[in-house]
Figure 1 (cartoon, protein in one colour):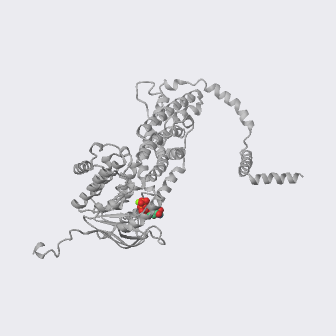
Figure 2 (cartoon, rainbow over the protein chains, first blue to last red):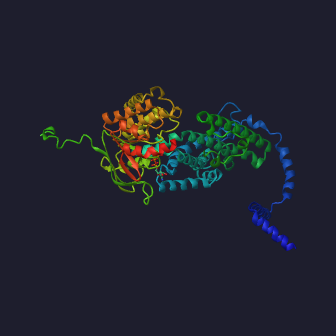
Figure 3 (tube, rainbow over the protein chains, first blue to last red):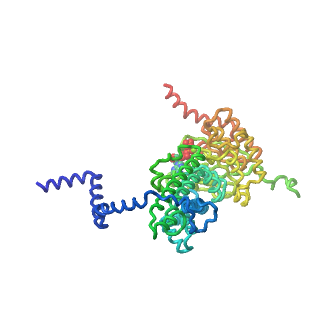
Length: 308
Length: 255
Ligand SMILES: Nc1ncnc2c1ncn2[C@@H]1O[C@H](COP(=O)(O)OP(=O)(O)OP(=O)(O)O)[C@@H](O)[C@H]1O
Ligand SMILES: [Mg+2]
């Protein structure tokens, strides 16, 4: 009796692949939570901690925008206290790091992308370059930052180098995909003319893909501003560094919260401006995705969103 | 002593061969070539028309002549070297879909024709010489697009885009020009203008031109020779043959 019921439910599982996958994932989830010793009780216990955090962080202490910080790195020389406040100095540094990393990244990644594009390069070269770009993407920017902090010491330089590495890896991939998407006729014209490969890329493929390339570069800048906020936590400059300063050892959560709010506002503003600008030079409006709040709140994976 | 006194024996051929295909097989699959036993010579100053039904391999023949596709067998030469290693700027191509660089201006696209004679420094710094820019303006003027020089090619009509591609080829001044369906979907008057440009290029610049035209009757009016792809062969175009082949079809439709 019960055996036949077991048999029939097994048969049901066999017939419905979605159900089967669901059951399998459910079992694995249970096993993992057990293995990591995750229990709901910890969340309930944590609730009281959250209340403590809330009471300490609220209201946010916006003195981070008005009080001069004497401990900025490099030292701030402006007269105005606002311009030398931790929030402004940190955010400016983050944006500066993102800007330099995007510029340097673009300069390095564009030739690499042309080498990696299978319609512009011989097979061996495109495959090799792709492997190099993939290797640069393996490590997240935070790990690159850690590495460069060890090499060149604490400060914005480590941040610039880390973000540049990361930018080359990601932007390079976006770019070679864009270059591979250009129509083949102009390239054939150039090849029939007997032009060398670099001229085919420089004068035919890259100009044709220029809208996509510029839009990707701006996107990468946004992305770098967002991620540049994090790398300061390991000492690579930017607003994260100032956050870390308040977190340990003082645990001044109200100031940290104020910094997070400043960061949030600035990042959303930069995203919006960048979107406007990107819309400006794309004559075909449909080429661009509409902004969505979800994308602004949750950091995007550039590979999936902007590869056109 | 001088060249003239020898009675023209060693005088250079005024119409040298620019494209020579000898016993060539063309296509992508060696088992099933699109065209076999292909022998073709196109000389300087000559316009040769190529017709044939859709999908028979006209574009493939042109791409092979341009050195973009290797012949399956036999030899394909431009000015005595294999087309895959032809001298820089010797071959000009106007593809079926024109191959203009999208989102760039008419001026930019035409200027690309001057790349073959630009020095390394000029291309590396993207600084065309004054002469190149003047010549670019001249050919744009010649095809009647002077007022569109700074317009993006995406905003031009089909016929205007075609003239941009032709202007680019004119600026390049190749020894051998390969034009794929340059006259398709054009009104009679524009087509006539473009035909005049081709004649001018062939006669005054001693270009060899191999062009594909879907309309064999029109091709006969301005080409020195018209060839036809039929089966897997390249044969001279025969009007009677063609009318015999098409008449029953017309009758069928009519009844
Ligand atoms: N890259 C390719 N690889 C394999 N087969 C191809 C390739 N390009 C074209 N072909 C095939 O070769 C045949 C001839 O194509 P081609 O473009 O030369 O025809 P066409 O005569 O120019 O036709 P149309 O008048 O329609 O332009 C077609 O059957 C096509 O499918
Ligand atoms: Mg064709």
